[in-house]
Length: 428
Image 1: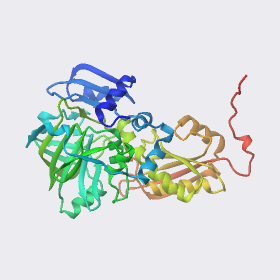
Image 2: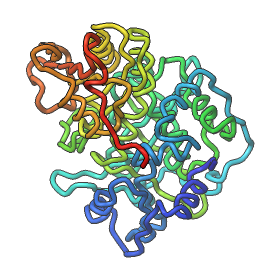
Image 3: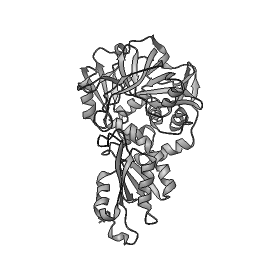
């Protein structure tokens, strides 16, 4: 199993999973369009007009790619992450790192980093593969944050009310941080995982890499030694407009006043690679949705012991719709599983509950279960006036509320299971 981005990309190319684009492209819409057309494949742009660094995207654009980076199968991915959460491991502290080879003080970010303008309409330039490292009382906290380029060494950073937001609130809007871009997907998965405040995502990443994560100390920050690009800076306490940004739904998000980050130093490796993520694309959805599934599964399992799996669906933007697979033991298990999922992930708007013979990641399988095992007058439960997701453009904008619904597509226990099981041809 690879332990840095470069070795992972090399292995993916040998396996035929990576496409190289040799044409000279600018870091603008044509490049973004290529990423969109690639779907769930990895793309490397070798020649970027005006910049030395190549650009890579689509690194973990699917469940299969993400599972491959961890040496597991798509079906076991969630269980693999849950096992790592239960047994985190310290990273190995080393004295040197490849990114220390080059340092630029007070950098002109736009002249060094090929920051992409993804969409022409109202489009701004965004860094999207960026992970912020901040010190907390329990260690290091890592989290993904998009960053809009404001000019020279200033960025407007989208910060939602979680751990980094709490650190900034405590510090009056000011905080020293490190930013990494271009790390092994295990580090990205750890940074995208929503855990309790005491979770040290570096320990989670190290567990996912079986203890083979090397980190270096940089100004009191523990930074993955293999990172392609590292920024050191501080949140100034100032705010600036951020957006519009194309989010998970593929629609424009709003413009908000967000914290300003000033970069004091930029570090990069020899022949460094710039990592980007297409907003609203397959990789964006994978990195937002898949890391939520272990947490949802654990919470739902506390309510319904027979839970098998939880899937945030691609058609539901990997955020708004879920499928829960259960081994039904009592009537009401389906409704309880749906309610628990809604509580575990408040952004959910629809939960479909199916039996364990239905693949929750297969949309056709799930629709078949709804078609053959679901009756709307009996199995549909609607909840009105609930808090919804800010990403849902159909929500009530005045109250930020939405209606939510649960579809119980499980076999009624009073009926013969044989009437509902799909028959497939046997061997001749």
